[in-house]
Image (cartoon, rainbow, N blue to C red; front, side):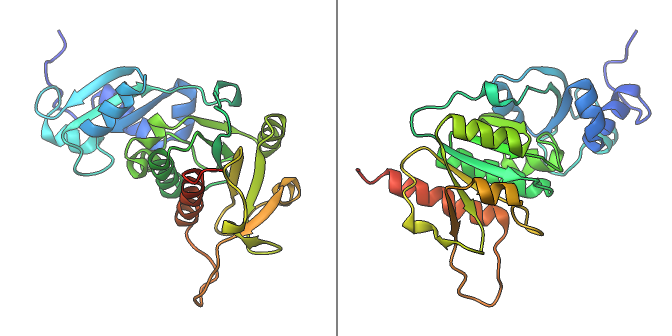
Amino acid sequence: MEENIITSVQNTRVKHVVALQQKSSLRREEGLFVVEGQREIEHCVACGYEVVELYKKDENVNAVVYEKMAYRGSTEGMIAVVKCKEHTLTDLRLKEDPLIVVLESVEKPGNLGAVLRTAEAAGVDAVIVCDPLTDVYNPNVIRASIGGVFCVPTAVCSSEECIAFLKAHQVQILTAQLQDSYEYYDYDMRQATAIVMGTESTGLSQQWREAADAHIRIPMLGRLDSLNVSVSAAILMYEAVRQRKVKR
């Protein structure tokens, strides 16, 4: 008979949760990921995700076991194992004149999560993650997005696939880059628009620079030559929000 409360950190279910937290390859293989915190779990369920296991501290796991399973602190004593969703371009349902954010080769989960959090707040229609170096169900993505990863329509694909998709849907491509570019507020973002951001270390690849309809930049008035990618994305998203509140 199975015990009502798990008391051993050697329990196979406990080890499985820890492995899912740590290994992106296991998340991909099993199509499962872990969500911590009551608020995040509620967002997850509200957005149509299926919870397959739920652990509550002092109800079905003791405090020692819970601390072993938890990736972070302050999770309101709740951890869930959840089924992943598919994130393909064909799943996106774009409205008229959509606003899309594209991230190429994002490598820091915290940045991806922060962009998703802002995208949800700004009412962005989709976030497309191209050639990612982290997966959307990384625990730090979930944490930084505060549930935005569950709510914002998201696709994962190659840059080539994304460029073809945007061109086919007649979405103008605005690439954020310092070189050969003009101030972002000089461009009309009220039409169908994709704001494309590159990595902080190397910026955008040449294929995106060549595919762009325009190159835009945020003026740098200080001594440093770049902003964090999530901050830059937020500035550009809310410029689009500002413009779209102005009648044509």
